[in-house]
Amino acid sequence: MAVFQGVAGEDPDDAVTAGARVENYSLALKRDGLKGARIGVLRQAYERDSVDPEVVRVFEAALEDLRKAGAVIVDPAKVTGIEGLKRAGGCMGFKYDLNRFLAGLGEKVAVKSLAEVLKSRKYHPSVQVRLESAEKAVLNGPESAECAAEMAYRKAFGAAVTSTMDALKLDAYVYPTWSNPPRLIGDLNTAGGDNSQVFSPTTGFPSVQVPMGYTRGVLPAGLTFFGRAWSESTLIRLGYAYEQTTRWRHAPASTPPLR
Image 1 (cartoon, rainbow, N blue to C red):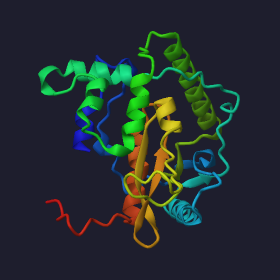
Image 2 (cartoon, helix red, strand yellow):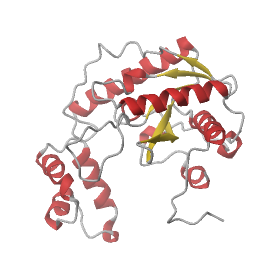
Image 3 (spheres, helix red, strand yellow):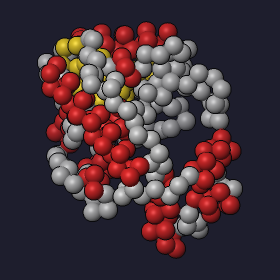
Image 4 (cartoon, rainbow, N blue to C red):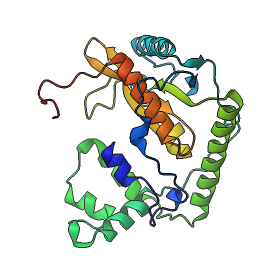
């Protein structure tokens, strides 16, 4: 919380942060923060053919815990208006952003570009193909037509989320952070289910992840709270209250308690 409080606010190098609302986030740490909260179930974020039944069972139990803590669960709570949106694609801003970031660090880093990262071979083999593909892509910056179209898509997507939340009077959405149990690093073949690649990154709206139980007896499962723009305080309040109610997190045996 202290770190988040310190980094919150406007960044002159990031136009997206313009107008950021900074609050005293410690005030959101309320044990009864779920009472009266209206929370929608965002099935669009996690329902797919490969979803693991055990993850679904753990999530359904989490919804019941939210109800017991005083939350009103709205289900279904489908985001309307995103089906007709067509993603322009082609922005491919990763190389532009990474090159600009590395170059700005000056002598603090040994590599100055994505090309130099590839040449160094100091990366995990599982990401090599992705890095090579990004290096071959066009160097599109924010002023390019492709990236302008991408931003228009993101703005429309965010407007659809906001209007739906307003219509349903929601404080937040919830969904499983992953649709499948965690897999080993480098395993790209077994079913994966990362649900964090669409709603929050597309809109730029905040999300908070907290433990919601275990699959296979020992593999942790996460619950994501997702909300409107600048609703960090609300999400922290909801996530904190859920954690205090359930106490799912078990500290690793290899890590001593914080003092």
